[in-house]
Length: 224
Image (cartoon, helix red, strand yellow):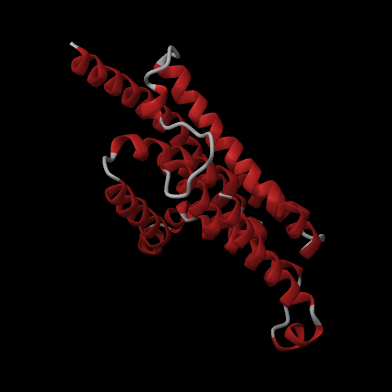
């Protein structure tokens, strides 16, 4: 887990340094708003991957227990499910807090855009983390989970391009589009995207609770 966070933060730091150093800044001039867009794009792509990879088990997190392991405890399915939703929210908050100093340093003059971006991108990270936790229980086999994970990421970042041609708000489900809309002050797009991801949390919570129930039934059947 630690190495992946270091790589993520190093990419952001290099982007900031490249924009602030005299020679790169002369060749590729970036003002506060465009630099913030670039940083948030990296946050959206890298953050979504990390949040979902931590949850699905593609990147190991020491001490983290999967739904299947928690199913053998005395906690109720609902408690386990909402605990995992809470973990997804905390992971999203931690990823944002790691990047916040760089974002504030690079673009101190765009406070409203940064606040909207943290809200929308943070909700996307939490939703993908919750989905990853459920997929870890629902999809058997490491290879199958990895394939499903990458297919989900590909769908998330490419499908909105098609949806956007049908409905301008359809593209709001893309974390990249959400970050850009936040910086540009497109409040309607931000609200639609944030609400969509917020709805994912209770749905995945319900799915996780049912996954725990199914795991307990399977264990009970084996012990008969």
